[in-house]
Length: 316
Image (cartoon, rainbow, N blue to C red; front, side):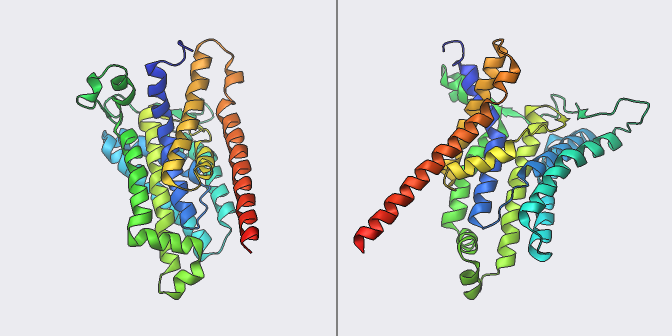
């Protein structure tokens, strides 16, 4: 226990949980607006690729981050066009985006790197150097506090932004007219339309926000966490985010804690693997935690529903 639970271990929890948290907040807003964006995995992959390539071409991490957000938003809006205007099933549309995020990005990398049959086909781009990495921030005063400073200070600026966005997401959903419209459209689009709310416009805004948040997660993966792009580097984080949103009952704060649980599980798997345990045994830990957590959540929800129905029956 002493070997595992060190300050570096707790530092890595926040580091690993950051991209999951971005995608989780995207899932929260999508769920509130009635838009099931299961294409978060693919959007993160595509954003990660274009963000890292742009940073390399322009020699600016900020421009790379900006392009990652634009690409994420663009892919999400394209999903919205197919789902809202062309009336395709949004689940199938999201599945297609996930497939493009895996195979399509690999194709682009091979084209961009000019791989031919006479050369080894590239499945990775190690383009991000230290100067192009999204910068970290040593928080004044807190960084000098023993133990706590080593856990909280020194993270990427996107890590602090992710946790700030938890509060901003709550403010957006519950303290702004836009948030009220998003929740109204998600709960009852016909009623929202009857009072003059443009359902199509709100749905486009909702899915665009999910794309931007997923873009943050993709940029973090390729421009900080992995220092480059590689095939399937997101590794299921988009799907884990959907599970975290469900575990958090669709609320920003609860979903944040769920994302941290999954971050803890992945950090634990990495730590145990570093201690010499076969990586094939520890790799499934995050996914096992996901399944167990969802089962527990489903059981609790079912019991709460039974209690609610019993209380209603007694009142009648």
